[in-house]
Image 1 (cartoon, rainbow, N blue to C red):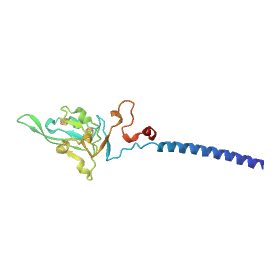
Image 2 (image 1 turned 180 degrees about the vertical axis):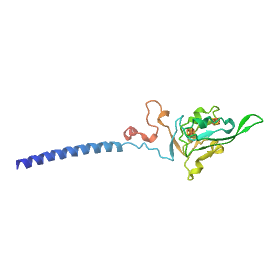
Image 3 (image 1 turned 30 degrees about the vertical axis):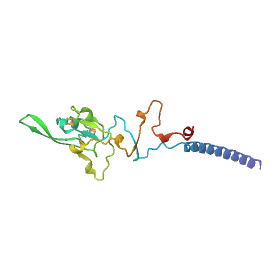
Image 4 (image 1 turned 135 degrees about the horizontal axis):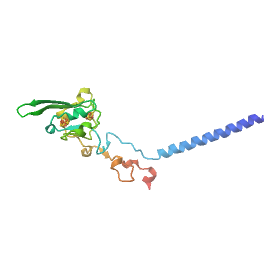
Length: 183
Ligand code: SF4
Ligand code: SF4
C-alpha cells in the first residue's frame, strides 16, 4: 500500500514538472507571437541586392575583342564566342556572343578576367522562363540594360543588412517588436 502511494506521489511530481516545462515552452512561443513578422512579401516587396551581387551578366558587343579569355577562365568553358579573322585588317571580328544561363553557375570569373570590361554582373535574378532554350542569351539579350528594382515604383524595396546603419538589424518597417512599436 505504502509503495503504491509512493509511486503515485513520484508520478504526480514528474507530471507537474513536465507540465511546468511545457508551460515555459508555450510562454516562449507566445512571446515570439508578440513580435511583428519579418517576412518580405515578394513580389510586392523585394530585398535590394548587395553591390557585388552576381546576377545576370551584361555584355557590350562593341567592346569585345574576341580574345576568348572568358571561355578559358569559365569552369565549364561556357561563353560561345563566334568570330572570323579579317585578313585585310589582320584582326578578329566578333560575329556573335552567347551565354547559356541554364548552365552558368554565376561565379563571375568571366567578368573578373575580361580585359576590356565588356562583361559585368547585374542585379537581375528573375530569369525564370518556361522554355529551357530561352535561357541561352545572345548578344542582344545580354546587352539589354538591367531593370533596377529601385526604379520600379510598383514595389517596395527593403534594404539588406549590408546597407543598414551601424547597430541596426531591421530593414523592414514592420519588423519592430509590438512592445517597441507601442512605446
Ligand atoms: S559566370 Fe562563371 S559559369 Fe557563368 S559564364 Fe561566367 S565564368 Fe562561366
Ligand atoms: S574576355 Fe571579354 S573581350 Fe575577351 S572574348 Fe570574352 S567578353 Fe570578349
